Image (cartoon, rainbow, N blue to C red):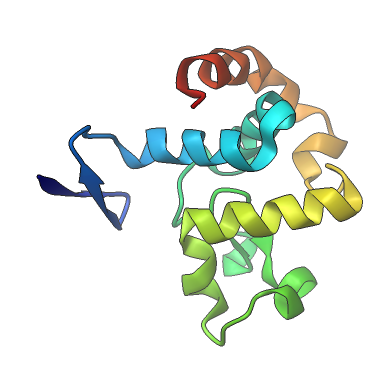
Length: 131
């Protein structure tokens, strides 16, 4: 039986197990980043509190990983870049490509160390929600 859930402006369809968007984001981070799950979650918690539709930097950074559109526009395969980035799966897939090319350096909270405040919680979440 399918169930539709809407949270933070994102609607998802689930099968049998009811999950929240927050849990789905954590699962997706684990799938995309694997052994880097803890660091990725800590960074994305600092950037967006894991909220898919959030906009930062005056609307130029979008989604869970706060992808900066001016810097990564060419990597987004559609005209409506903001809407595409608000889909957390798209956002995290692009974040992984950015990470694979540049490491964590594109994220300011990594450079300034503020992500470290979230490491303990990120480690707990990685263990709790891994597939």
